Length: 239
Image (cartoon, rainbow, N blue to C red; front, top):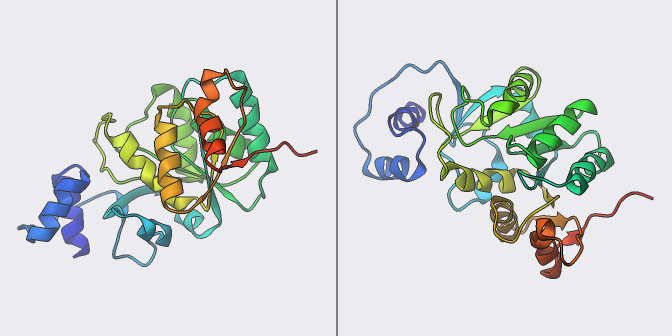
């Protein structure tokens, strides 16, 4: 069954719906060679947090240190085009966390990249979950970060090598971010954004959501303020 899942993942480029249909139909398959490292939903090392999801990924391709999945984890998310307030706040947040906590984010530009970079500067552990093949650096300006993460941290994707960063992959990827973290920190979010999709996933999984507060008229943080109004915790700077 493990090799069957791999075959479907390669055939359907990691697209969950197509893989699910193939598995349900017990579609014809054959053994295939794969040079990538991967976990399937059947493996002991598969992160148990993902079983909370309605649609846990059948497969995860990875590069780096798989043992990072065993540590306590928090999800840190925010805007791609982030403000100076978010930039400073993200580093303050990472610095305030316990050094044994693994920082999980999505490798996008903006807050995601800042979260990974701050973790690396502080010698913390960090996991990146991406929406394309692990051989694709997206966005391009984060290519150096990809290489650093592959060598000393952990990158995960449910998409095999060669898969392009298609727009619909990223909101779907966000369910993995939300599930892996014991808590979800929202550094910055507009009302309608991918960040809010991740926060919604976290809330649906009964994860603790903690948001940065913003001025009432600040469009950059309207999503954060909305989350706080709904009952999310408020991130407070250490005194």
